[in-house]
Each structure stands twice: as C-alpha cells, then as structure tokens.
Length: 81
Image (cartoon, rainbow, N blue to C red; front, side, top):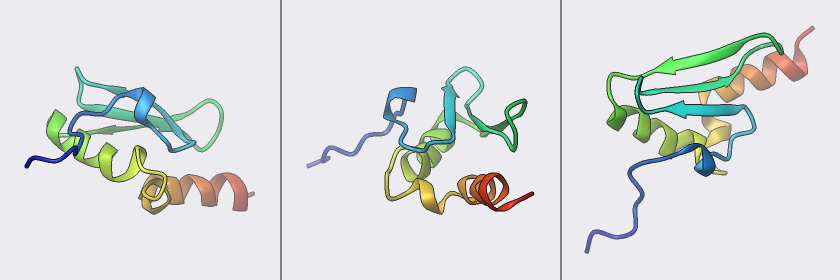
C-alpha cells in the first residue's frame, strides 16, 4: 500500500528556475542569489529534512512558487532596483 511517494530527490527532479544543486554530503540545497555573483545555500539538520523541503518546494511545479526563497528572489530580481 505504500504508494509511489518519492522520498529522495536529486538535481534532475528540480522544477524551480532558481534551483542550482542539491548536496547529500552537507544536506543542503543551493539556489541563485540576488545577483549573478551570489548563491543562497540552505543547510538542513539531516537529509530527511532536506528531502522534505525539496519535495515540498523545489521539485513540484505547484510548490516552488510558495517557497519563501523563490518569493524573495522573484521580488528582488524582477521588482527591485
């Protein structure tokens, strides 16, 4: 009965346009920063927390728009000075 719910995510699964990469070794996700010379690095306590975040935000077409980092980057890159 377990269903087909994915529990581990990779770069290839990402849908968010700001996503750069995921890192299993450091349980982190890297996204574009506010300009071309910066990145946002989000570090998690463990891989399970990172995979939950990626499954909820990075890897869902309907999810990444509700990500707080996506909202910040969209506002800053497209509405800022």
